[in-house]
Length: 371
View (tube, rainbow, N blue to C red):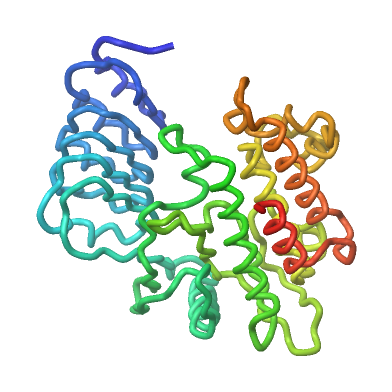
């Protein structure tokens, strides 16, 4: 269904509205200035002329303005975390007003005529409990890590108000964005290649360092994509370093629900097997396009059970339908590939940590699948 006409100004009366997504319609006219009254709005994605008053939305966190004509003023939107300015008519120097957006995590300037450099700054709000510890942990981890599939640190800043790591800019954003934003698409080979990139990074962390590093928070939003769509693992804020004789450590730090291994969530036991579990969940999500906390998963049903119940004969019912279109001459080969990937993902996510395969074996299997 496609909507048309003008965008109704009375949307500005919906004071509790937190999200507006109205792109890919045939609206005409200007974006109503009344939308600037929505102080609780956290996400907006449109394709029209943008009123200057929108800068008053101080709580806005996600902003998609692709294919518009924008000025370089972002006013008081200090909470902004996601900003997509691709396919506009921006030219000249990268806007200086971006310096005020200290919580910005994703920025897309592609298909404009801008000059200059803008790194991605990861900010640690020092008002949050444990922020200094998180910052120190990530600095210490990244100082000694060198791998083509890990995000590079350019420099770091620290003052009484906030700490920040300046990371290498990744123009294609996160894997999460490419999975769920309807303006983007990854084919099967791209998804497989990104999983191989992530697996390569994890093998290095587990086996290529003087002591094993457990990432502890592997998920699509922590996989960044460069200009060539190569995957880079990011965010080591809660990573753990295992001692020379240690197979696991215990912690009270909680990772992201849905990706966390059972033994980590229940007993705080962290080992390299926890990363293997998270990697398996990420694989499932990447090829089904279903988040582990999707609304279809209720009660005892989770993404692993959902896939396991369909494996192998019903795997076509759970994978992303965009990957297997009717009439595709390669559908049999694709289904064989997807079946192999899901078999691997299930092997990564068994409940017992010792029964899970290693990241080395996972990487080797993925490389064989790509052949």
